[in-house]
Image (cartoon, rainbow, N blue to C red; front, side, top):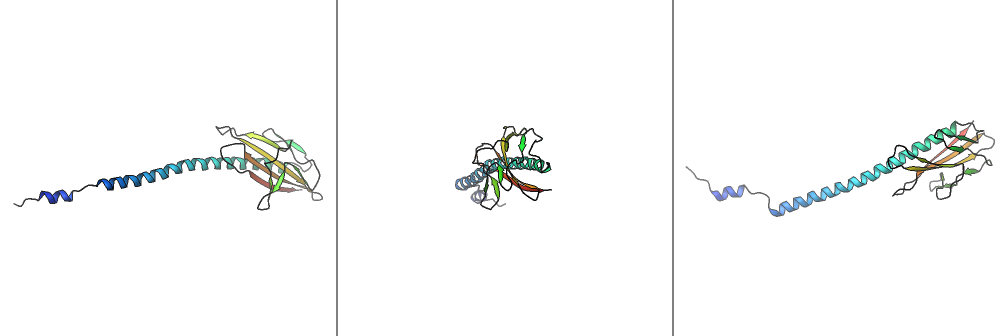
Length: 175
């Protein structure tokens, strides 16, 4: 009968060394820290997307109401109770909220200027638990001879911990 050598058997059953265990732990920690940082970024981006979506839907809803009015309508009350002025000034000139030209040559609302009575309102989102409020402003260009109006409408979240860019929509109605 042959006996086994205990030294050889012991060498084959080697486990991890302390250095291997420390290195594996460090690699795991680096991965976990990276994933943990992604959670905060994801929450921030989700919040920013909610703000963008809400501002876009609000702006589109208001703009749809503007375009459904007759061209002779100078003001009306929208479906959330705001009195909206639709241009009661000179033709071929902007009336209402200040308008600037953006870097890509679009007409946009200048939110750095003060509000103009009748051409803005603040709306509180009833579905947002934090009570987010949105600043909505617009300007109107009345065309001569073609019986039309051009509307530029901007909406943005009021306040917040980060810079949220305003949503700007631009459309023209001719009848």
